[in-house]
Length: 430
Ligand code: PGA
Ligand code: ZN
Picture 1: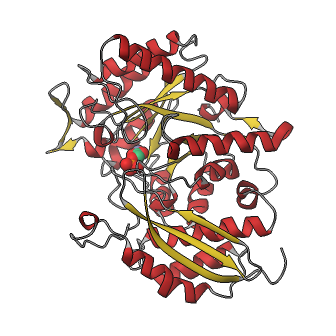
Picture 2 (picture 1 turned 180 degrees about the vertical axis):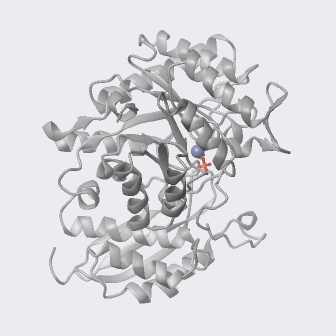
């Protein structure tokens, strides 16, 4: 990178996410004229300790969801502080953002402001270094294409009228390449649509592009996926396994897990039994957020019981935050961490959490948010980490498909060097 490539201009603006809510987009221009931008996603079933997504709260604009304040922070607070810094010093850029904010959860500037700047800087620096983003972030060894965890059936807060369980994912781990994995997943997604049409069920889509069928139970959704896999000509387990995100914090009501569809409430022990039962009856390789995010003891117990067979992934529990993960590792809670950059607010902090997880024998699943944009940086992040897993929704809707398309491009560009993570990503005997 030429010595002169330092940050010349940082500009934020308010744009829209996939739910039509305002979000932050940032453009960074260097003094050699290079330009790149990034846009920030937004969650609906958010963990309590996520970094703060700053919203204006002005009811006259977008129902209070405007982000003009965060945009102002980019333009008036962050831009002057970053101007002149070398663009390829990501650590220093992020340290500056953290110091400018100087709160534990980015509540002053907003993690939507800091992340937009952080990712845009990484992107423009990669460009100046003439490297794809995954290589700029991950170095020479970045070569592993993640298993796409395709959320083809949506419920909970992402699919009104659907199952209580938030995400039912296809895991095409038996495919030989990422490109083939995408084909396995897409063909099964279309087979699922055919099944729903045959049953005169609705084929409306939820926030992450999966179908939102009205079913009689949550198990019915699992059965439907098994049928779709077979209908598409694949073998459950060998070719395509399943994964769930229970998003249990959103089921938690008055000390019980409420399953509306089945009109029953489960206590923690019953919830753990349900996980055991499903993991035995179905080829499930990963269960995310099976318990409420305050139940660390429950997580330790469940991980002890099930963790050698399947992946127990912590999303709301860890909120991609290194300090929370350290606590989880000490208490043996979960064996996988969900990695969402906007839960912490900078690229450096995101990488630190993921690397801590990987070096402690935890797996990482890089993840989108239910409110997304056309930004594809998480695809590069997954390859940069060589972590082997990404969830970016169903193979439908532009903002979801964009991530999978980016990974197809990365696989093509890597050529012979590309390796598909496949089943090894879920090997619990590591
Ligand atoms: P969110 O959901 O993006 O709405 O928070 C995703 C998840 O819970 O994994
Ligand atoms: Zn989750």
